[in-house]
Length: 261
Image 1 (cartoon, one colour):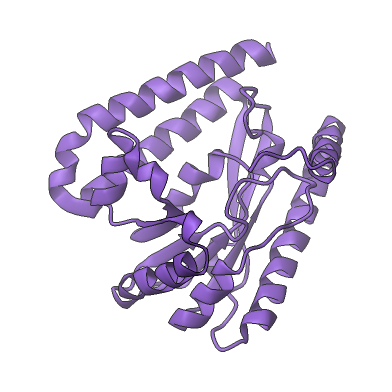
Image 2: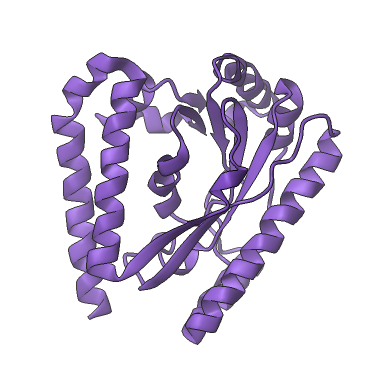
């Protein structure tokens, strides 16, 4: 039954995404606001499909910790689920993403019109400075900036690998930062088609104020996110003990050096 439901969900999920991208093209005439409307429709449909077909509920916590206006949102990245679920409390945002995504037909066009921040990761330190400079007008406009501090998806249980970009972005723009913890990878695993039932939690943590050194900020951010993620993972395992194997597999995969980049 799990396999069948997952297949049905995946088919409908990608069909819905394709239809929204095609029939939502006129929304681009409204600029990024029009694109955000299409993106939110995608979120609503996707979450509904997860709940209805897979029995997977998406729960939000700590939304009162999100200040209005310009703020850096630093979220743990475990699955594709949060890429659309985080849109619920993002009225006007820009995501730090790899430039290759803008080359995807239709999808890339939406990213460009929505004024997202696409970077060339191969440029090393130059890419870091590019992030800082590109984010300045976004913050100045009172918009949110999203970043995944580890740069890519990491399975639950894997040791953290936070990159320097998030600290540079925090230090270079003087904005407060809201850490985001989650346990989505327990239910929607990287590069697997199964969608487990349960409660996927996305939790916004208390903001980290501006003014800290890069080192102090990086340590505080990692501790806040990882501590909360461990708590959310333990909570999920208490509900469904079989999820403990998912965490153990993530840790073993990373320790063996088998985790794809």
